[in-house]
Image (cartoon, rainbow, N blue to C red):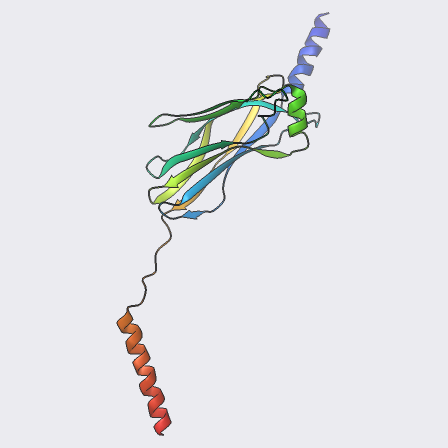
Length: 200
C-alpha cells in the first residue's frame, strides 16, 4: 500500500512538473515623448511532461517599469480566460500603487471544458496588454516579478520563466529645417552659375 501511495505521489508530481514562459513584447523599440507605448504580455510553452497542453485558469504577476518615464493609460485583458458559457465574467485585477508594484491578474470563472475550447491548440496567447504614455526620455525596461500561473485544476505550475523587454524613449532627434535664407542663397548661386554658362 505504501508503494502504491509513493508511486501515485511521484506520478502526480510528474504531471504537475511543468513550465510556462511569460514574455513582454514591446512592438517598437523607439518612442517620442507623448507617444503611446503598448506592452503585450504573452504566455507560451504550456506543454507538460507528457506533451499535453496545460490549460490556464489563473495568472498573477507584478509588472515592473520606470514611473518617471511612463504613465499607465489602459489595461486590456486577453480573451482566453474570460470564456464562461454561462456568462459570468472572469475576475480581473489591475492594481497600481505609487512606487510599484503594478499587479496584474485574472481568474477564470469558466469550467475546464470552456477553457479547453478557448485555449487548446494555441502555443502562445495574450494574457494582457498595457498602454502607457511616454512622459520622459531614457531607456524603458520592463520585467515581471512574483509570477504565478495555475492550471484548470488550480494547481500552481511548478516552473515559470519570465522574459522582459526594453524601448528607447525620447530618442527621435528632430532634424532642424534649413533656414529660408540659406535656401534663398543657394538658389541665387545656382541662377548666377546658370547665367554665366549661358553667356559663354
